[in-house]
Image (cartoon, rainbow, N blue to C red; front, side, top):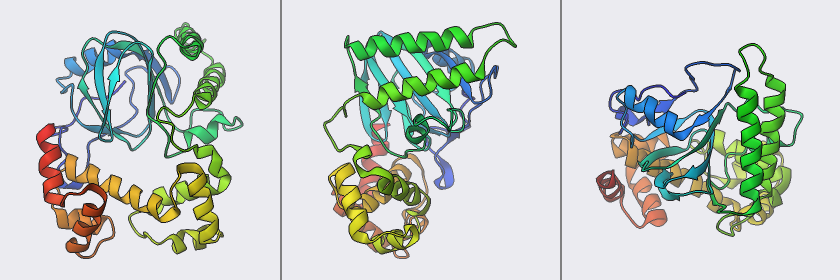
Length: 302
């Protein structure tokens, strides 16, 4: 399902966070696999991979914990794992199993191209944002998702050559739409409230955050006014557009400082800061720490 971590995968050299590609041991259906968390950990142990190695993935993973306990970190937030925990890790996010513990559950992997593009679930897959964890406990939503995942496993486990990719796609779309119904776990903004404007802005932000932090540039590229972008961002996140842009840049800065050994000046240039001093001031505004202090603190936690 996931290949062994490359040498030094716990911290990326040269400014690159180790990335794991979609590479299941047996690809019964292109772009899709469903297994359980215990199997994932067994494979990683057999390959000599560190259980707590930091990495990104270029695909989506959905995990529904059914037994045991543990901890999993996604972009500096550590989530407790217990029965009823639902995790959604999106492409590009940085994660690690802080403490796998005894947790087990259904583990679903799929590439962004796999869900049916005719379904509104396609919008959810292409979002670069959204919550990573819900604690469902014994709520009815847990039972509904567990049933759907059981149907996915049953279809995926059919004899070779009889598995229907279309059925898997439609069941996956149903899973995603069920998740979309869940309330925001922290009571934050609703990405749907920003509508198409916010969705287009976030896609452009993901492409361009390292080259421009000017709201006017995004407005020009998308054909909106800055005021329109601000309304959409405020509806979706509770923050104006400039704060959303700077937040995305700050997140990538934190990822690179914590998980790579790249010099601060290199990271600054990579994120569009010609002068490291300006980068330092920017990071201090967002984290209260200098780049060096932030790196020292977080690498000491790993």
